[in-house]
Length: 410
Image (cartoon, rainbow, N blue to C red; front, side, top):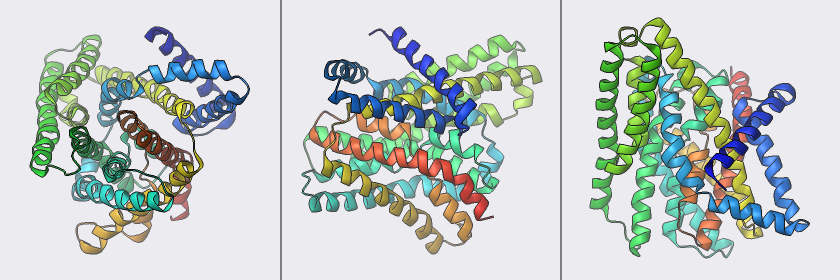
């Protein structure tokens, strides 16, 4: 099936589900689309017992479509730039210490906690899996997903301070999680169970620090070009070109394209924006990227739900997935409350704010894309089930209740 046909189907489904959600369900946009897509995917999955051949053909199409590559190498750059472009840096800067601690230390600590618990639970359920796969699961599920957070949290009417911390954390910690995931994946491919910490450190510096520097350089260059002209069509085109060229250059140079796009978006959207762009250009640039954000979010959450079709369920794997939800929530509680206990002056959060930050740690498409990038094996199927259940809980349960929780806590 050609890319054109696949995109036509995805956009058609997105439009239909968006209409149904707006007209009847009244859910937040991405939650409504993901909910409807999940229902349809479940019906398709159940249909395999009656329509064996059509289901087999559809499953083959989904498996042949490289979903992981499509999300990580194409969609992610656009989504992160769009999200960071509309993020107010002045609000993020006020809570930079908390954001940095959660985004770096929190991801590392969460990866270890989740890996240890999942490995122990696998032994109890008599599921054979190497510890390196548990670490990979910890790395891919620990980062709060920027796409899910920006698509849900910013419309949940949570206090501005909490929104700034969770959004800022989500924009930066995915880069940290991806770097850890890549280092662990290289260890898996090498056939060694021992992690090369010196190589891990160099990889971290190259990916994370290199990505940030690249984003600053590219962002400043884009700012200068926008400042030199006043023609909104050309300026919109420039932003598209810089995202596409910049993200692909990062992939080629083995830098964190995610962090580069976040930094570039923050710089263009906040650094002397009124001098770089006229009021008319600002309106067109922001409205264009808002529309891109909406369209790609719609497609992304439908793609996530389609993953359900290719999962081979086994009861003990399903139980592991259910328990993983509690493990991930436990790790989130530790990541938020441990620094609050050890560094109360740095983590200036009261009890109500801490509860909202714990519950607002949403997981989404990035985790699904990373688990799909694992080499084919039974361990991949085990982790895919756990990841999908965690994402399902995060979007449908946490996403729907985060606003109500904030209102309840005052």
